Image (cartoon, rainbow over all chains, first blue to last red; front, side, top):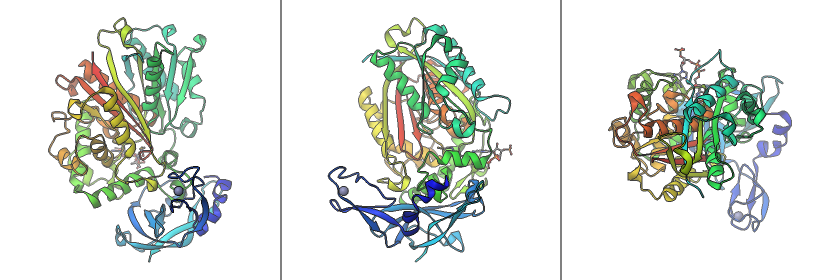
Length: 130
Length: 388
Ligand SMILES: CC(C)(COP(=O)(O)OP(=O)(O)OC[C@H]1O[C@@H](n2cnc3c(N)ncnc32)[C@H](O)[C@@H]1OP(=O)(O)O)[C@@H](O)C(=O)NCCC(=O)NCCS
Ligand SMILES: [Zn+2]
């Protein structure tokens, strides 16, 4: 992914800044500017997520693209945040065998990967056991 | 709306073709389909070409015009349109062709699909394919396609009774069928051990749970049913065309191991055709990974959630079973040139209904179905076909 495209979303990526619909109460991460339930009747405001949640499902990635190949094997998971939104992220553990569905996790700030061509290192949110 | 029929089909051999280019492949499939329909080039009104990512795989865009040109139709100035919906590009190209003929806007339309994936290495193809998911919030954190389907598999296995062996049986069955299909990339039967001992790609999915990286093209010709008999003795009627969408990212789905777009497109197709599940004699589903076939059988309504693994193990979906699934070998054994797959599924349905499926021919098949998925289920196309 290009550098500007990644950087544009840095506050969201680094600090888990998402959105919240004040009409129906839903929380969105990744952020949405239009609530799928209320659409134009919704009222969207910013919301910084606490960064705690549980693992809904996961896998251990062993074949990756260049950007992530130096990290393999790594754990990829869908995490449900306490506020209800779900996001995809890596889970950092000593041993992938530790991970299980329902595992409580919390967000940390880590290196995500390296862009082979430009050598730019990207950072973002990963999770560790809580 | 007019009734529509498929009057010609053509498909290249699927595989890794160092010596054949993107345009070679498409032209070969297109010419086969046009000859099969006994057509002259100038009779064609329009073309729709399914292609996911020529821009990433071969640095070529403007595929509609390129294909029309190398098919020798530039001088006819026909309307040619590229259709993109990741791995469902072919299914959607077919649907566009059917809609064009049904509406009366066109009479003879070619629907094709093509992908040339092996000019780049696995790392780049893995990255290009990840573009079928959400690049900003899935791909950018390290999600691969096998990884996303592996997360579906783990969610599924956590909630329903599905054993690792039942999952592997999907691949064993599809390789058995592929061994009877002369265009298949893998024409080799395998055993449960082959799957269980193959390299882990994304837990719990192993190499033999995955569809491969493939070069290939397929094309079909559609025409109004009322004139179809002028071209062929065995026109195959399109009984339903349906399409549905869902969230681009897997994490936003209502239910991770139910493809709601398959449920919606399936229901719409059955309604349009006025048919019940039991009327379907066979189905080609989008088994990009073994777990995807399990979900497809259930989400199309052929059994309840959690039952497809047992049915597969019992042979219900085998070539001689009650509901043969993926007689072509599916994406697993026949191969998965992403843009071409949806059209190849149509070719297989037509061959079965005409009785021309050779060593994998079903007895007396009257009605067949195809299900083509884009991404992890953000786009689904479902079609139903019948003998005339
Ligand atoms: C699974 C995958 C990563 C394997 O790629 P790879 O490790 O680079 O494999 P290679 O091309 O190096 O092939 C190694 C061997 O395995 C075989 N092979 C490759 N993919 C295979 C598959 N899916 N099933 C069975 N055998 C396969 C090759 O024929 C080759 O055999 P050989 O050594 O006898 O020649 C790759 O096929 C893949 O990404 N598949 C998924 C495609 C996808 O996501 N499609 C979109 C889905 S919606
Ligand atoms: Zn709302």
